[in-house]
Image (cartoon, rainbow, N blue to C red):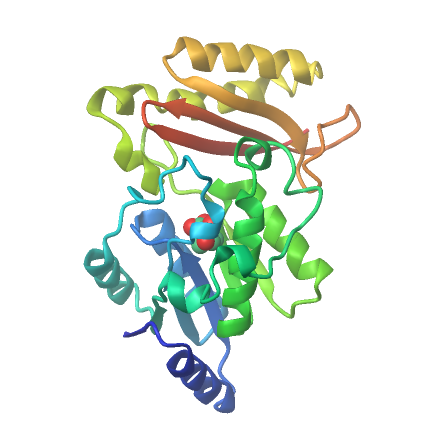
Length: 281
Ligand code: PAF
């Protein structure tokens, strides 16, 4: 696997592959890779001849009081995992390479509606940062397909909408969440959990499953979500939000909707955990 932080080198390799008629898949990440990321690389191989990954801890998607400085950086271990997963090329730019003018003077991409609410409300500016970096990385890598984990369900909808609205010729492949046997979704932020917190963190997903069962029987979506939030809090977490939504628009679900998603976020010690569950009724 070749690793480069250099845009010209990246473009040269991509254009050489293009000249050979090869199909390219892309897996953007912020590093600190776990089995969830590797499942994206495995999926990417099914759709293309060459797989490009990136590692870039994107300052534009972190709020002022968020964890950018303490965000785990584990480049050597990440490279080993990507090599084992047969990644063809790894792009590791610095913030200076990506945002040479600085964040304040940088153009940005903003996707309305699906970026609002939920994580968009708890983390103002977060999705602007995500859509901007993903757009920029798409322009650099020019992939045919790109894989994103469904753990970040709202992020997948934001990127899918950006690609449709801006006519980007890229197929977005959503990849199922990888979980521990307790049900806890794998996340780089699980590294912040203490041993005690690891025991209570699975309550988030357990209550999503409980709620998924209840909404098959009862369409008081607001009441049920409120009940689930109190169960999550009683388990020792602190619910940020839990909502039952239309699976594609992310608008609050109505009685007639058949394809739903439950979106939730909760604090557990220093970690802010997010999770979701799609439900058909
Ligand atoms: O999901 C992530 O790790 C990031 O939001 C992404 C898509 C790599 C953009 O920085």
